[in-house]
Length: 219
Ligand SMILES: C[S@@+](CC[C@H](N)C(=O)[O-])C[C@H]1O[C@@H](n2cnc3c(N)ncnc32)[C@H](O)[C@@H]1O
Image 1 (cartoon, rainbow, N blue to C red):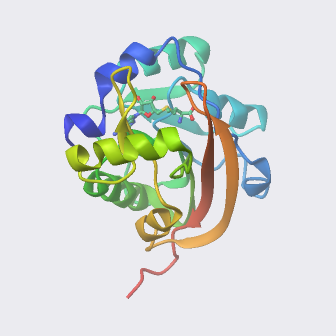
Image 2 (image 1 turned 90 degrees about the horizontal axis):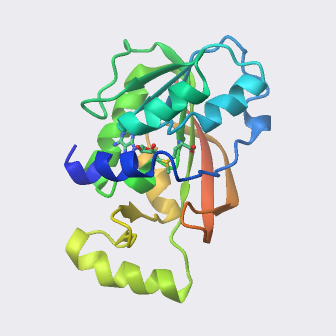
């Protein structure tokens, strides 16, 4: 992954100040065994893991490229398991060892198509056949401020929807078709639209997808 696809310094600088808000829709996980191995990829300060702990999930691990985020997570949740990812998206988990992957507001931090595809491939590798990927991310917005910045930065970054945040980050908003193409090797179990407060205080349209790794590889 290029530096642009992890931006560790930016996320380290944000580690103590930013609040993340994508909601965890518990009905999607209600039928999941509470001992299931859950991996929160790009876990930040452990927000969604805390929500899962409250629902009695007891096999939770979180990884993130930002040592600052992982340090805050460890302080807030001393009994949970966190690790810093040095060579994203490579994970130190064996093939087919994870039941559920949580991927919340992480693709928005990864501007390039290739890096997003590599990440999803790695998540698929560690997921058990039949395991679930629960993705939450931001859609292309249709207001003028966002359309302006998509247009302004499209040439520099080569992808419509990638933009500079103004405080040192580069983020991406996506078409809903992009997510379905990214998850083409998965079976989509459910999709929901959400509205989220972004970390810089704006209301944005988002999407959540619950995707199952097929029990047999696609031909
Ligand atoms: C917007 S925050 C979301 C945190 C958490 N998932 C939540 O919803 O509360 C994005 C997180 O992804 C991490 N991140 C960014 N690029 C990453 C990458 N390529 N691999 C792993 N983590 C990454 C950042 O350090 C940050 O903690």
